[in-house]
Image (cartoon, rainbow, N blue to C red; front, side, top):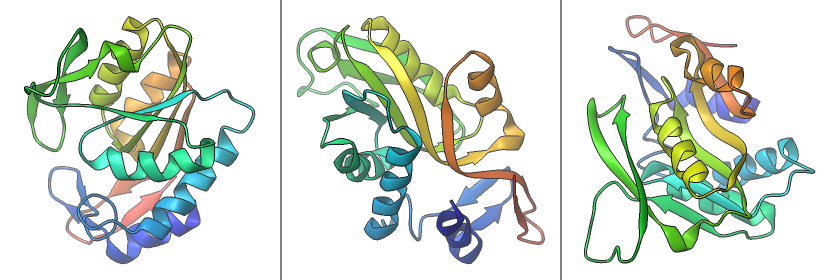
Length: 192
């Protein structure tokens, strides 16, 4: 998606350690118009697929998933929580994932009443690097007996291999911007 790629070049910052800072428009300050265009593009890419729910993970995936849901007939958005709280009641699906950007493991939890075996779930997230967060979300969907209808990613760092592994396993991954390399010294970002 050229609009997203242009925005990454304009406002993104390649940092040491394979980190791409896009907080000016994606995961701190949110450009809702851009989110709307991203949702429309995912709806185009997944046209013909039955999507019953969208699943994401807190916090950065929530905004883009909610805006995207409007392009899928306002399907419900469920987000996996990263911590247990008194508001989480009843039976739950849970797993542990490793965050590339936070450099730590944490639990992710979804209440069982929000996913059912008959549903086709579109997973949406802001980043795909090694694929650990997505592996956790896939595990939760499959634990529910639901089916992963596809995976929509805003920015994939293709050189880290997570997307390729998921595609090899048969998952349909549609990334709106796929980065093939970044250089934190020059600031250069190259797209696949």
